[in-house]
Image (cartoon, rainbow, N blue to C red; front, side, top):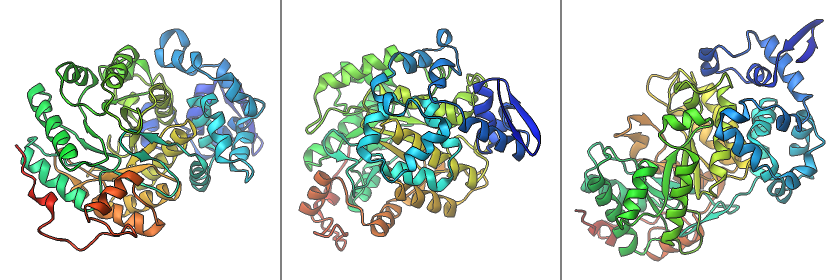
Length: 458
């Protein structure tokens, strides 16, 4: 039992799971689940009680029972006690103060990262303001490598996302070349296929590999199909750079995606065996999003933000090149408006970075949410101020296959100009060599005779 007194009233919270849910900032998903605070007063009381909980308590009281959930078992069994030692004596409130202390360095945060469980990260985020989440995330440095180096200080990457509603190779190639001409694509060239047909997926993979090899682009490709399908493609000799999977924070929600840890282990080893990376071997790409556990009915009355942080424990196991929260994609049932989407994006970025992940964000919303592109401009700017690893680059910010609103190649130009950020160094060198950018990293004047424009797909 946890309790606190506020305005001469005693608030009781029967366990840590309830306390965490009541302390969460308001969001429609927790309202839908019936686990959110009944009033602002109760929410403040829960935050006060949560601030006094020792971090050690999260190792003793599991929100989802150990014997019932393989994600819980992963969290507990892989906990790094040595890394946890420097902060093991702190409460959640003390931990917040330690994170924000000027003397807490990026190196110190990297050291403790393996000792921070998802529940600890989620708990401290619940008592932080937006500015706290931004400044603390900015201290976290996570660097990954495959064919280029992602996450270096002063650098920022973009996933080039040239989706097409019928997987037409020429349509995809047109969007892809367009994105490269704007300097996008150093995070990954990643296609969400409309089809799950092996021949179609194989054609997409070969086309991406052809472009990368023909123009000697120091980047990586990914066809975002199910992990079991990626294993099939690898076994058939198809050129696979990164293996993708959507993941969640509970065993049941993972099963809803048709995946478990054993399957991910197999895929990880298969991708490593190809040895396609030139500067590193981070071979996995994961996407997550608040609300996925609730939408599948396997949230176990745990709040959606904590479930999201638990997904990061799954990702951390595989040393991924990229992880991103698709923050507003599931819809207003889980994140109702621009304010809730903004808060969720900042929470996800902070928790992921604190846990040692190269976190990016698909800054997005669906057309039936109470949000618009101005909200996305604000969230993107706040995230990059906090050290976001990468964003999405989509023609016109409008994904014509997935039917949602995201961010564009032009948004990436805005961000680089505003913050003075560079591309991944190997990719920047290629962009300059092929005369897309100049020595200052600015786009050169468009040339209709540029060699990239001669590419013909199919």
